[in-house]
Image (tube, rainbow, N blue to C red; front, top):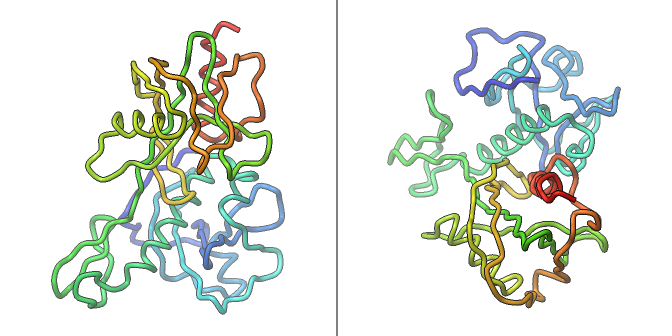
Length: 272
């Protein structure tokens, strides 16, 4: 599936448009298969659900996509269900899930920025960019994205993995954390590693990035090498941290995550 993002909707809507309906913290999807597919405009119209308004997202495999915020009193029609992004993460194809993430975050952002945060006037969507504009004071409110870093730290033939306190018992992952104001990505990586496991790192290299809606983050991934120090974990966030060889890894994050991509990279390049 290829997605082409967009802001300006086409002049005409069609019955084949995909409509990602957001209700509270959940998305409405069809139950006819395990893929978690969103309904199209024809299906929503047939069921009497409102779908005229919404934010244009772009085109997925030739179909225009929209994000619509449903009111709390809308009932879920037969054959459909409400699912959280975490639930959809396990069943949706990656390209479709990426559009669902975009739809969810834009709907939530538009809901939370209906009024100007500076003067309180009612805001309206901008025509040529993803922003809400205040007609009185001109303040523009853009979707909020929280940058975060994630890093695979290696020491010769071993990879540093940690089990966060929020993880299930046998799940380990690479280290991650949110960027603070005035901090570069590299400075954030060094600080997070130092705070969470007490070691120093070197040779920081960019790896890739991934939108991550838990919460509204952009995960920027890096690799790095151990420089000095011994592991001293931060008990507030980390339960356990160990250097693992590629052939003896514990339970890992799901394949779609960039954390898993970093770990898979380590396995491929370790020569094990």
